[in-house]
Image (cartoon, rainbow, N blue to C red; front, side, top):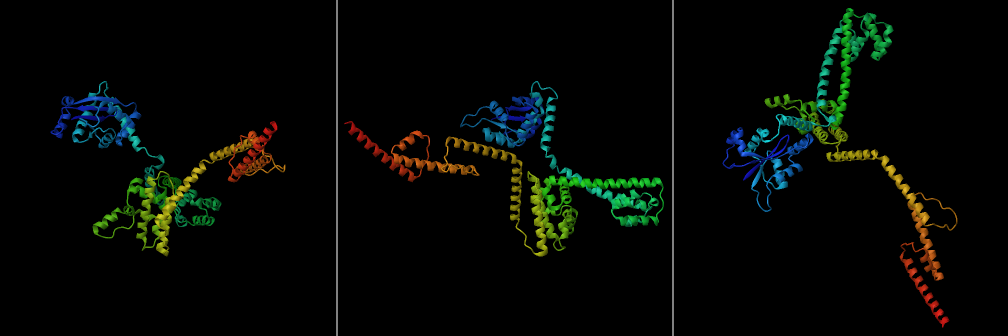
Length: 559
């Protein structure tokens, strides 16, 4: 049986024929050794066909299809043109060797071409890849390497291409930097307090906040120059006039030593740096909040932005966190304690990073473990929703938070919480309602335009009907316009029916009136009720009898 080899290169598809091979008695190691020799390999494997890709974009699309196990139309046409045709009802006398079993199964399913992928075929394809530039004529040196490099870059970019607004790596870096800034600001603030306390030691007891202390130290500088004239400016800094007066009084009786001007300049500059770091920390926190609302809105609504970011950072990514079961998520951050407990056969930890959540702190000591287990369960659900939902929404996170609150009340007061299925149904209905409201808000103009067009068309139709079918008022008064077009049409129908009945009665009295009416207004055709049909039949019978009598009288008169 002949073996054809399909090789997908960066420059195009190629088909090779391997002849003179006995696959049954062939040893893979001997094939592996003979592949490196071009003279031996070239006698066995020969190029049958080659089709280049049209462009770099076409090469990328073909590469993506092959990696996903799909056969494109170009590949199908290439195989059907160059492989031997198989007659219906007969087995093919060849097989196609491919590198990927997925693409082989798809080719077999669509084209009924038998495919195989084993170690023997892979070794032959390895030899094809090794000597590919020798098989293709008019291929310059370096062209194949350039094509491979360009396709590799574009394929990697396409695989790594995510939504820019949902890159969780930014959250991981932000939370790391936030923790580092907290440590640095604390240590720098302690250094400012210790440094400036040599000059004004009483200020430490009056001002407790680190940021405010650095701000006041920068404002005062030399305590000997502090007087009552600076109380308004000090009040603006501190925010309390009594505290400002207390600082001025303490400066007058301070026990600190004097500092040289250059020392005061250094203290002032260092205090300014601490203030800048504190302000940057606030901006970084705001940035983290916005990013968490974009990446994991439900997790942020449930457990908070900082704790949620720490969970994502510790897991490595939002996808990894979504893959974690709730039991793993519960003890994330307490791995050392867990393995120590397993080693010493002690009690395992009940919570890790989720201990920083406010729910664990609000629970009683007896229920902290239960609360941690329940909260980890809800965090696992929220992370999976954030990872796999296409649209960002905080509805599920808010509902899950309500469930945790109800569980707290259940532990404290015994109030029975709602069932999970009911809460999820309400959350799903809320999201659907929000989507419909968004759709309605997007197209109010279009609906108003359509309504106005419909009104105009209805008004025009009403005018045409009024022109074609004039209506006579019995009293001679002008009738009021109805509010809607439907009422107008109903009134017109009633008047038309009344007029038809009156004319039919007149025709019945005159005998010939019905015939004249049909001749004049033959275009008017309406459906009548059964009663009116019976009356018309009687009128027609009376009219026919009158005609016969007249004819007899005329014939007698003529005779």
